[in-house]
Image 1 (cartoon, rainbow, N blue to C red):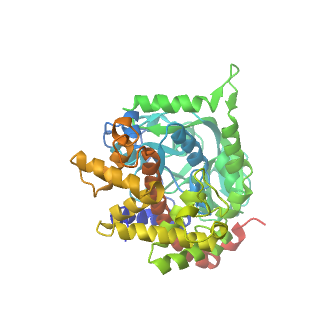
Image 2 (tube, rainbow, N blue to C red):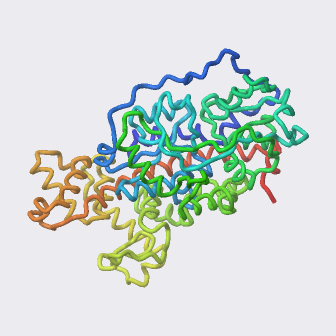
Image 3 (cartoon, one colour):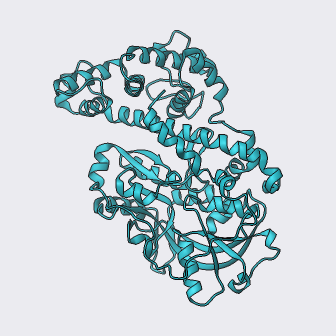
Length: 509
């Protein structure tokens, strides 16, 4: 019922699930690899429109930074309702420094990340991209924040561990055309090495391909060493082959006409990754923690991405899903939205206390509740109180369309009815629509300025916090809907995968 236009777009996320693609494209073991054209040039192989005019000032004015990425254990994923991932956490640190909300955009099967970037539907590609001359034709890159080695990975069904590139003769190496791996393989092929390339669909990330390698769906591929290390924690059947490239620089991709944004990003990255006089990389504490968490250690993450865990936890967003579903049904609310609010408010911590005295999972203020403060630390009581308050706010704005109704209700839940009423009056004074969230969000930001809040009935309002709050919950809701859709398809695939591919052996003991 909520934000139908946005949900329809997000639902298409079904097609980008790593395991789903195995089902669609990987069932025919006898099929011959698609051979590359010997005359392929180094020109960027896809049509990408000119970039829109949108630099850092426009991003700052919107209050939202849109991150284009892939759903994988290294870049971005959902864990117990919380958004995590190496790329996500690093870029979130930048967003917080610049007082921006971070929104995630995951390309669907038919969408190019470069077109999403240049069209303005995203602002930055953060997906472990190596800098290549091909990619530089359509985007600019920030300074690097990582160095990786490219290595061959083969299926143990090949029967041996290749020690050199010559050992790969007759073995097709499966990669995406638009990848740094393809560029490197072409260089080796031109140097005379016996390279046979199998072109994969563009919406398959490296982790998805490794999943197929582990199942024997393809004989070999190329992966960055950090991605291989992370995947090897929960996949059996991967055999490490020779290195084919060392010290590739990994960076974020941005539009070519956003120099101010590039400067801001480079200033941020310089604090976290730079080279000393000897050329040795120096990383910040934050970067070292993220590397250990997602690539070097990360047993929790390897458990999350294991096929067995995914089957057992099908459809699970948070530790309180069943309780939230029951209470949401009681009040006629969307349980996914209620879960998104709980994640935003407390990260599902029933003992959470805010600076303003709000407590529990839904951060209920005791003075606005009919139950005792001690009872508000009980998850069921707290969630029910939060749901009741939200239900009342939704009823208050029942005459609005569903998108504005939820936006206004969320803003009221965060800032209070008085501040939202002040913002609506200010919108009227500005001859703007008091029933549109876009207008109210602008007015909330204006209520941080003395010339506006001194004439407001309820005074100063930290409007930027409320606007970010609404935007982030809406984005989280869309993400949750996408994850649930993908999880359903993944579960259906995994239930039959054991009989098709011997999937049960993929989980490491």
